[in-house]
Structure formats: structure tokens, C-alpha cells
Length: 332
Image (cartoon, rainbow, N blue to C red; front, side, top):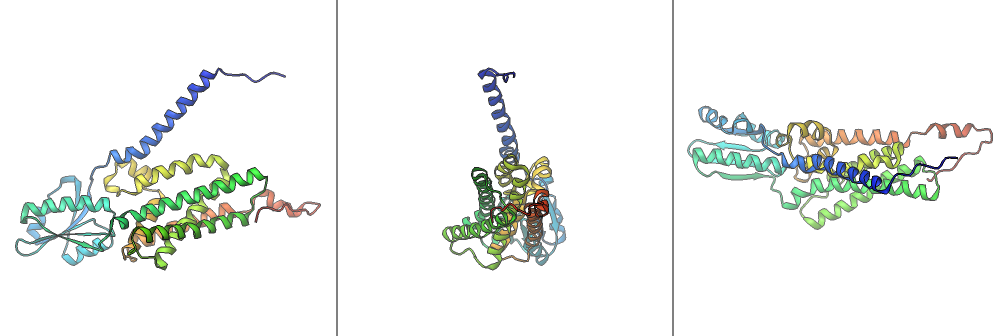
């Protein structure tokens, strides 16, 4: 019997160092890189002004702004639907008003407000500022915070169940996995509601808000439980970095991200659907398109995750047909 080949400790240390450096490069590229390369690129804004003035305004900003020329009512509808990040209203005379909304992503709002204020100042002096659905600092932070807490809470719960089962030698059955998913949904929703009440007592904690948080938490829990079932602890190589990567991207609007980050990360990250949908609900805009989109996407994630998590394995399907009729009892 041959003895295993032993590599020098120095070689092992070098491999470990290289692995650490590679992880740092990947995470640096995916997290800080997204923030370091932020730049406005056709940020959607609207202007409501007489035709000749509107055309002059639409030439302001170059490729950084994407102008929509419409009437005041149409511009505000676009803002309510979150199709634009700000509105510039130029009425008869020298008056000008910059209109923004607390239901819109604050990163996009900030860029639009600065650009529109500069354009208005060049024509009519310092404009008035009007905010639809005023939002507090906590209100701006809460949507992304809730999404991140739901993800990490579900991740820890899934990892804990996997490790506890491995340590005790117990089989985790479909019933136990289902209890985990629902339990995460209930408890994380309660924790998020408690934080909302602590941060800002004016944040609504109605059925729509709590139901959406519950949907996001159960969707994340089901997705993670399914991957942990398929891959075991190897799933952490995907699920762990997502906690660091997705918030850095979901906190931005696509028009501020480098096209590579926009296509490779922002386009599919589940955090943006939960974050923007919850933002609209918290600010009293339940009819915004991102609420409906968020419900559909999170609902699909939940359904797909439950199928993978609860679908009987080939071994479980075969057990009732064994000759001795003895069925292994899992954790339920």
C-alpha cells in the first residue's frame, strides 16, 4: 500500500495565498467595481414646457440624460410609474419647478435632481423643489435593508439545517424543509417589521408591505434550500458572494451602472425586484409596475425553489416498494 504524496507546507501555503487573492479579485470586481464605475448614461427625465423651450432643454446634458417632452400631467404620470427619475416643469413666465418622488430609487433621484436643477437655473434661475411621496432617511434605506436581511436570514437557516442534520446523522425530509422555508418567512418578516418600527414609526406595516416581505423571504429561503439540497455546502460558493454582490448592484439604477455590470449582474439579481417593489409599497404607490413585476418574479422563485426543495428523490420514491416495507423516517 502506497502512502499518500505529501506536498511541502510551503507549497500548500502558496496555494492558499493564491486562492485568497483570487477571491479578493472576484469580489473586488463584482462589488466595489460596480460602485467605482458609476456614471450617468441616458438617465430618463421629463420636461413639461412650451415646445420651443422644451427643445432647448432637451439639448442639455448630452448623453447623460434621456429627455421626454410632455405636458405636466403626463410628466407626473411618468414619475408615478417610475419611468423617469425627475420632472422639470417650466410654466409661462420665469418660474420653474423640479419634481422628484420618494418612491423612486434615491440614486437615480439624486442624479436627476442635480441635472434638472442645473438646466432650470440656466434658463429661469433657481427652481422650486417639489417632492411627491416624501421619504425619510430610514425610508430610503429600508427596502434594500429588508432584502439583504431576508437573504442572509434564509441563508443562515438553510446552512444551519444542513449542518445540524449532518452532525446528528438525521435525514432531512420534505416536511422539515417546508417548515424551514415557512419559518424563515414568518420570523424574518417579524424581524424586518420590528426594525421598520424602530427606524421610523411612520413607515407603513400593512398587509401589502408585510405580505411582500414574507414573499421575498420565503422565495429566498426556498431558492437557497433547493441549491443546498442539490449541491450541499458547495452551494455556499454561490449563495455567500451573492449577499455581497447583489446589494451593491441593486442599490443603483441601471442607467448609472457600467454596461457590463448592467448586463451581467443587475439584469437578473433578485434583490432589485424585492427592493424596488417594497420601496413603492412603503411610499404608498402600490400601483407602480415594479410591485407587480416583483410579485411575479418572487412568486416564480418561490415556486421553482419549492419544487427543487420538496420533490421526492429517487431514493425516497423507491423506499415504499422495498421488500421489507420499512421506510426511513426523515426529520419532519
